[in-house]
Image (cartoon, rainbow, N blue to C red):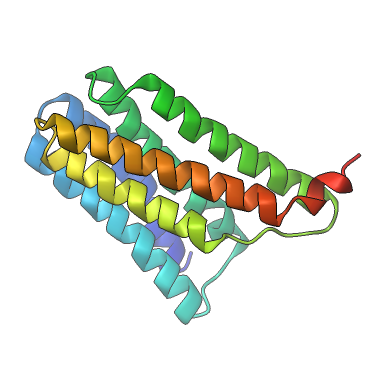
Length: 172
């Protein structure tokens, strides 16, 4: 297993650690673990691209780890009333819809690469969730962060579907 994949797996291992710390009220350590997991996302991508460590395992596991990390944090915030459940439902819908479109494209022999809007969506979401972890007491931070997450999520979802609408023309 190469360095990039080890970092991805570290992120996966940090998710339950994050949740245990969050639910036990260890706010500082919760933030430290979450930001560490977010940094591994940046590092594994950088290492994979720049040191020729891109693998099929990484192509599958990296986005999965990102989604689980982000959704774990969002579910935590929903649990405590700091984020509406419908916001998480919108994020989930976008993730399932884009994944479904990618599956249809694969059946047609096409690969839909990650778009910049998707990368920006992930970064925006991780940053907003960090802000919420730090400043959860402030309603304007929670509302603003939720709004930014939703705007970037909806925009990137629309862009993915618009740029790849031909996938559905050829679908059976």
